[in-house]
Length: 286
Length: 352
Ligand SMILES: Nc1ncnc2c1ncn2[C@@H]1O[C@H](COP(=O)(O)OP(=O)(O)O)[C@@H](O)[C@H]1O
Ligand SMILES: [Mg+2]
Image 1: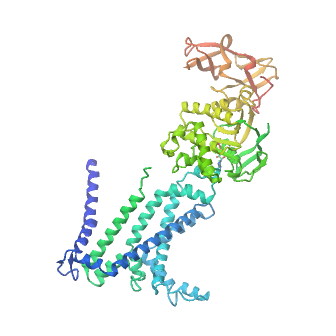
Image 2: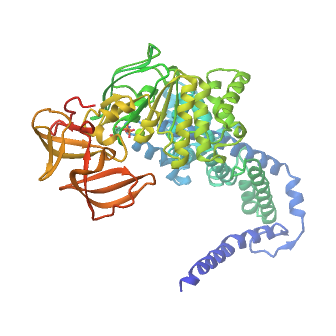
Image 3: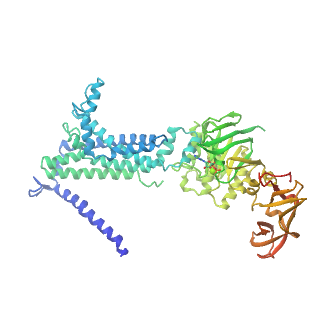
C-alpha cells in the first residue's frame, strides 16, 4: 500500500499540473496562431500574423517599456525599503514582536481591498489624504490623472503592499547570521555600515537572490493592481503587457493578438529569468 | 615588567543574574593567563568584557595603562580568537586575515605583507586563496589565529579556541599556541574549561566558579597548594580524592580502621582530606583499599575502589598483578595530603 503512495501522489500532482496549468497555457499559446473575433467564433489559422501585428505596434513596445520600468523601480524600492525595515525590526526594543506583526499586515490585504482603500484615501473630495494635503495648504495631488504621476502612484501602492514580504523574509534571514561574525567584525574595526556590507549582505545574498527573482516575476506579471487603479491609462502610461493582452483579448475582442502578446510576455520573462540564473547562480560554486 | 592589562573588580550583571562578581587581575607583558572553570562560571563573560563585546557593569579595565572601560573593541588594542573561528565565509583566507588591517586604513601592500608573514609563521600560506568552507577545522583554527596575529595587538584574547578540534589536533595546536605566544611575547588571555590545557599552557591560571575567582597562581602552585576543595577537585587528572575524615593527634581517620598519617597538626576535628590518586601508593602497610576496577593506561595503572565507605582512585606505576576484588594496603606521604575545612571548604594549614 505505502509502496504506491508516493508514486500515486506524484501522479495526481503531475495530472493536476497538466490539466490546470500546462493545458491552458498550451491552449493560450495555440490561440495566438488564430484569428478569432470572440471566444465562441470559429478560429481561422493565420500563422505568425498576430505576432507580426503585435510586434509592429507601438502599443506593444510601450507596454514592454512600462513593464520593465514598473517592475524594476517597484522591486528596487521594495528591496531597499524592505531591508531597511528588516534591519530596524532586528534591533531589540520594547514592542518589537508587535511591530513585526503589524509590519506584515499590508501583505495580508487582498489587492482589491488595498487598492480601493487607497483610492478612497485619495478621493478628490472625501479622501483623508486629499483633506490633509489641503489642510497643509499644499496644492492638490493628481494621483492618477497625469502620465508620470499615475506610474508613480501605481508603484507606490505596489511598494506599500509588498515591501512586507521582503522585510519578513529578510528578517528571517537575519536571525540565521551567526552573532560571532558581527563580533569578529566589531573587533576588526568595522562599524555598523561596514558590518552590513561585509557580513549581513554577503550572508543573505542567497535569500536576496530569491527575493528579487520572485518579486521580479510577480511584479512583471502583476495585473490586478494596475487594472484596478488606472486600467493602463492615462493614454497608456501605465499599460504593461498583462494589461495590454487583457485589453486586446477582452475589450477589443482580438483574442489572437491578446494571446500573442501574452505569449511574447512569457518569452521575455523566460529570457530574463534565464539570464538572472546565469548571472546570479543560486548555488555558489566558487 | 609593566602590567599590560589590569582588571579592577570587573563585574557583570545581566538583569538580576550576576555573571561575574568582581574579578581582579594584573597581567604582565608576555604573560599567558588561562581563565579556567566549569561551564557557566563566567570565563567568557570576563573575556568579553576585556574585549569590549560585553559592557562592564562596574569596575575598571586598563589596557597598556589606558582606561578602556567604555571603549569600543576596535579602540582597545586587542585581537580575539572565537570558539567557532568566526571566519567570514564569503571572503578568501587572505581577505579574512587582511580585513582588520584594511578596516583600520592600512594600505593594501602593507596589509598583504603582514598577511604573508603571519601565514608563513602559521604554515597556511598555501591556503590564502581558499574560502573557509574549503578548510579543515585545524586549518580554520590557524587562520583564526592568523587573523589575530596580523593585527599585532597588545593583548590576545582566546575563547575556548581548541574545543572544536579532535583530541590529537588539540594537543598539537596547544603546543603551537604556547610556542607562538612565547615567540611574539604578547600578553594572552585564554579561556578554557579543560584543566590539562590550562596546566600545559598557562603562566598563571585563574580558576573561577559561579562568577567568583577561586585562586590565581602558576600551574604548579594551584596543583600543589589548591586554595580550596573546589580547586583541588578541578585541577589535576585523574581528579583528587576528597574524603571526609577526622583529624586527631597526627592521625587521619577516614573510617573505622582506615587510618593515614596526617601531614601536620592543624588541631583536631573533622576535615576534608584531599589525596591525589598519584599520591597514593600500594605499600606494605596502610589503609585497606578494595579494588573494584582496573584501568590500564600503558605506563600507569588506575585503580578504582573503596577505602572504607569512600570511593577513591589510586594511580600507580604499571601493575599487571592486581585485579578487581583484591584488597591491598595503600599509603600516602603525609606531605601529599591536603586538608580542607569541611564548612568553608578552605585550605587548612600550610602544607606544601
Ligand atoms: N547574554 C546573557 N544574558 C543573561 N545571562 C547570561 C548572558 N551571557 C551569559 N550569561 C550567564 O552568565 C553566566 C556566565 O556565562 P559565561 O561567561 O558564558 O560562562 P562560561 O564561559 O564560563 O561557560 C552563566 O550563568 C550564563 O548563563
Ligand atoms: Mg564560555
